[in-house]
Image (tube, rainbow, N blue to C red; front, side, top):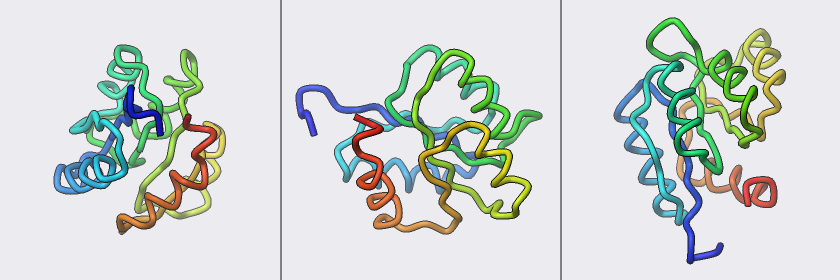
Length: 127
């Protein structure tokens, strides 16, 4: 990884404990993490502002916009790679998520190695 400029990963997760956990995972992997986003609407605004290199997106979020809808809005101005980390593994959510062109779809609970392997597998698309 280019150490001159760390890649920024935006974390959109309404469980603040998981948010902190993912942030620590990303920092171990050498990324800057922009976290504590719990609303889809806020995620859209922050993505416009910081132009992240990757988004970790939960599907169930607080407020009236879920993670997939937020990504559909983000897709209108960005092709940023997204990895969904969610408890929603049913076919309906998977199909909706496919419409946003995700890199990976990880089902909670995830551990450090799950995220590490997903990022490594998709490294060229993120960098």
